Length: 457
Image 1 (tube, rainbow, N blue to C red):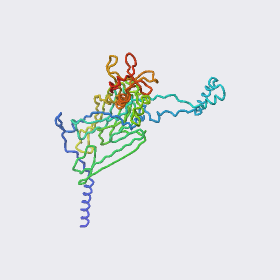
Image 2 (cartoon, rainbow, N blue to C red):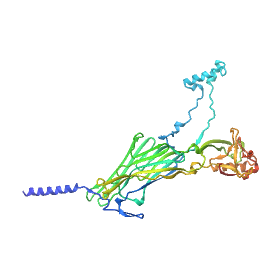
Image 3 (cartoon, helix red, strand yellow):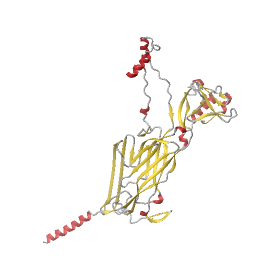
Image 4 (cartoon, rainbow, N blue to C red):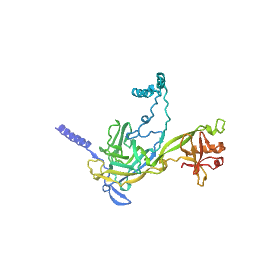
């Protein structure tokens, strides 16, 4: 009987211990919280609703990096725009093209005999001259979009659960493509989408944890939780927490956070901005190949210099590219239950706000239309300083002698002033001079020491 009573007592103690071990203790964030700021009186924090705003900055994409690859918009990869391999003779034609080609060559005016027809078909095809245009109206930029909370409306328990940022360039500029998009949690690129999420927390039951790190544990123990996931999806898979699109030249960035995720922070996107044709023009830019001095450090003859002209399509004025930005965001606002980290006891309001649009400069004017440089001379024909023009036998009109860099223009100036003072008007097959009102006037020796380098007209 005594043994039975003892077992009963031990059993009760064991049940009590087991009951105590399995009891869930809720981790508290704080007993109560008062939020005070210089612009408002102190109030309980659950009475404060966070506010957010958006800002943006862009930097030029490094030249070693490719531009967007056409996930959205009309940009294409280099392989898609490469020039086709020319056909060296008619024998390389497809069947139907060869038949048409023979039909033309069979005309007695071209091939009076069968032998001449065979020779004409086998003759090498010579391609005409090709002109390439350097399109500088497409600006490759890395854009950093930042969503921040107003520090004067701080609330330790609330978080931003969804954001939508709309960016509309002004004055006819458009977004034409985007490629890579990166946030703290997600990376999207042209071929794959990588989602990397890492969450860690470690707390004793007597200490609070940061907002968004829910945790429970047992009395007297340190509770810890860690998770790292890296998942690769095909590019056609939908990622719900980050969506980027270009529609009608406007950029749209939508994010939706998971449980415990606050969406303040940066979104970095690689984009293409295109200047409209009304703000652009075709201009020649020149370069000189070859050395001004030979191996014996003697000045070479001006006829031996090779002049190359490249056609650039560039913005005509260095005007800023600005955009109108609008932020829409949803706040998970806790009206009660914010004292605990667990969310199941929260009373929540989902509040959506639409901010007034703000204007921000995306690209400064100097980067929209990078400067080029030219040689200038002093007063001629009653006018102020005038640029040096170049007359080429292969061009129907004269043009200012513009270079991409100050160094290139200054090197030519040094050559003219020190190595070609006697015949400054000669540059390869071209002639240098002033396009005055009275007509084109070649450079004269007396003009040389008055030349200087400044921006291209």
